[in-house]
Image (tube, rainbow, N blue to C red; front, side):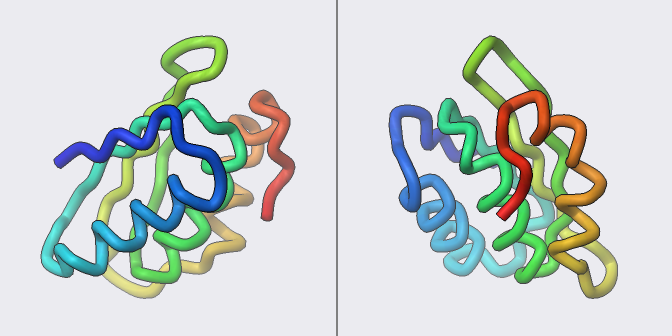
Length: 96
């Protein structure tokens, strides 16, 4: 499934993603498209609280694809952001 939040600014990309995940509790994967760099930290952080791992792919100078996948166990938001640190630094987002 895909959620397009391009054109939205904080906190809406994160809020819409969390709302979508909560409305679809059985979803194994979600792709989120965004052009708002703060969402690269807030979406993975909040998704991790719901048990999702995240990967970020840069699509253009200010456009990203965040792939969320349901993890088998608990997910630590800090560990997710640590793993994404390089991508966040390139986008100018050091973390939450």
